[in-house]
Image 1 (cartoon, rainbow, N blue to C red):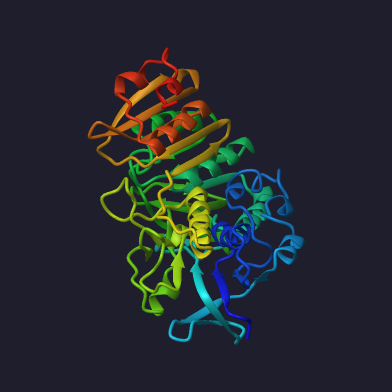
Image 2 (cartoon, one colour; image 1 turned 120 degrees about the horizontal axis):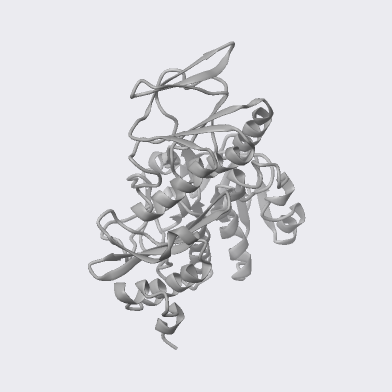
Length: 408
């Protein structure tokens, strides 16, 4: 049995960051990182961008080379799967049959792609894009694809659509809502991104879902919608959200509610177990109710927060959320999290291809969505982190440099 130390379950960005940050914090105990995918921990954002397009190889998206883990004294078990948590004995059971003891356990189990429960879902040629193996499977099919159907107009769906259009494919996006990214961005940003995609040749079907997939000769050939449309497809990429991997926590008796419930320090109901990243639901100062965020920034910053606490420097998690999405030649960057009722104030001209939308809730800045405007994005992150008061009139005035509003 390995000497008790920190065991991290999940070999994604968050899990890797916990292990790496523990060593940076001076933690001297044993660290075991357990991932259920083969190979080294890797970055997920490139999967729907450079990696899928063949512009980045597998080794280019690995977070660190093999030597790093040996040098840092991090035991990497991959592929391996944790099947149970014995909280009383502080140990985890592995699919291989072994048991490992822990002093502290970090659940960084992430999330899995949600798949529509409609007829034909199991046909070959219908794939999510969540893992490297998903991306590789899509890559293998692309040379034989002319018609690509993307189910879901979220970040993944729009990034894949842009890539497909760049490759000269006939691309159609099917979206249940009446516009793309409806839950994430303002109507102004949504309209701009949809128009940019349309100029690339992407076609959209809004206000409809998938009713069924049909095929012939053992693979998908058509997508039928709830509006009775029937679209031909050589490949279907599904991007309709994710489900947090909470089963391990639930079976261990930990509270779960669309995510593993944690406190402001990211501890579960068991003080010897923490949870971070896509699988964790935590109390945020900017939200009236606990939230679960799906972003690299959130996973990395929560990992650093837990590592600092385990090294004796515990502080509540209070980072400002931020996100990004590259869609062809457009980069969307978001700081903060807006809600449906937040007002929107435009800064700049969308026709120029460079602008931002500032969102306000009860008179206070809640989020900023920037298109090809990195300066606005960086200023927004500083405003939100410092609680800097800004007004709609100030942000709408493009002659005013936003940095002048920051405290010296």
